[in-house]
Each structure stands twice: as C-alpha cells, then as structure tokens.
Length: 224
Image 1 (cartoon, rainbow, N blue to C red):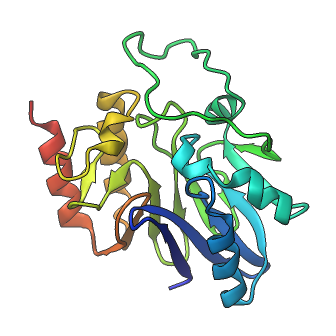
Image 2: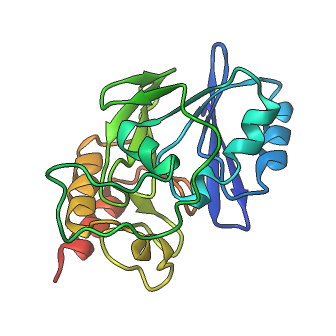
C-alpha cells in the first residue's frame, strides 16, 4: 500500500501518499505536528511535494504554516469553498441551507492555496471527490491505483466506523463539528457508492474492505 498514516495523540490523522515525483501529504493534523510528519517523510526517503487538505478545521490544517515554511515551493490544495474558511472568510454561498451553522475550529492559516480543487480534479494519483456536510467544502480523495478512500471527516473509525452525520457517543467530536448533517449523510452514501477497497479516515484506524461497516454506519445515521 502506498499510504503511510501519521497519527497525533492516537486520534488525529494525516496521510503520506507515495507518487512518482515524491509524496502527497493529505491533511496536517493539529498545530505542532510538522516535526512528526517531516520525520515520517524522511523515513520514506521521499520529499513532500504537495499538501492536499480535506477541509479547513484546525485539527486538519493546524500544521500547514509550519510545514509550508519547511517546504519552500510545496503545492497546497483545498476546495474553493473551504479555501475561504482557510482565509477566515465565513460568508455563505447562495443556496446553502439557512439552518446550517459552521461548527468546530476554523483558525485559518497564513499559507494560501496554490490552487483550489473541484470534484473530478486530480492531485497526483488521487481523484477529488466532493463530500460536503462536515464542512461546506469538504472533499475526500480516492486513490485511483488501489481504491483507497481518504475520507477526512466524512467518516471516522475511532470508536467504530461512523459517519459524521450523527453523533457517535464513543467519539462525538467530528459529529459535534459537522456543519449540516443531512448533507453529510448524502456524502457518506456517495462515498460508499465508490466501493472503496479501504477507508482511511481523519480519526481512527484504516479499515480494509469497509463496505459492510459503511453500510451499517449509514443505516445508523439515517435512523431518526
């Protein structure tokens, strides 16, 4: 598998994806995580050439500025919608549900994206998949080589595989930080329809052959 998980405090993940030209880092964990990420890249013997962000919450972008300072010229990508949140712009888009509320930490970063992502774009071997709900512009990344799904906070596996469309009492934090739960549930279904070979979440262990567990999580979230 061309994927290395880097975990902080046993619960916040970043991923190093091996490519022909180096490594793609997906998410950056919390502030203070740069050293561990750079050490993991050094152990792989490859440079980090791009940083792809699933969304703009602080536990995913917290080490972006420190990493960008250590990696001059690194490409930084995030969805156009969450790029605004990265810049601490909390204005809404036309058509967004009026009852939706930004939750969780949006600390912003000094680092600006070098480009913004749209569904279907490619980041190395990763295909960008829209998965809004947890945040307005949340995206996931599907590795087209082996169908690993890096799902950000569309799913968590800490305390069992769960969507963030409903609070998981065993690990409630992602659910508490979700912007719009019905949209998050629709995204969880869309990601399941991709039939991923493994599920790599923002929180928790990587799960192989996750279809049945994803089905169960969706059914649980859909119950009133």
